Every structure is written in structure tokens, then in C-alpha cells.
Image 1 (tube, rainbow, N blue to C red):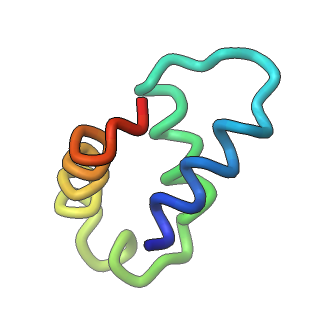
Image 2: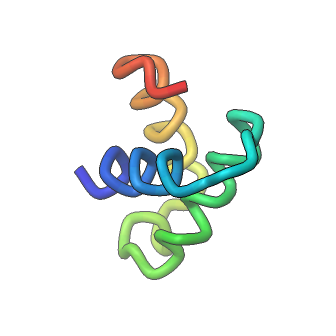
Length: 58
């Protein structure tokens, strides 16, 4: 899944620790051209929050 991969890539490349919310914003910004994020931004945020909890990505 694109979100998971982007989350992990940005998490490992960030030297400064971002809060979970800041990191989520960075991931969504990096994925700004993703069709699902464009067509359903609110649902994309809900799915992202679910993925973070499900996979313990925090």
C-alpha cells in the first residue's frame, strides 16, 4: 500500500522526530497526487488513521 511505504520511507529519512500528526501531514503531502486522496480527502485521512493503528506505525 502506498501509504504504508511512504510512511516508513519518510519516518526513516526524517532526522528530527515529528509528532504523529506532523508525520501524517508530511505523508499526505507526499501523496498529494494520489487519486484517492484527491477524490476523497476525508476518507483518505480516516483510512490513514486506521492504517496507523492497525499496523502500529506510530
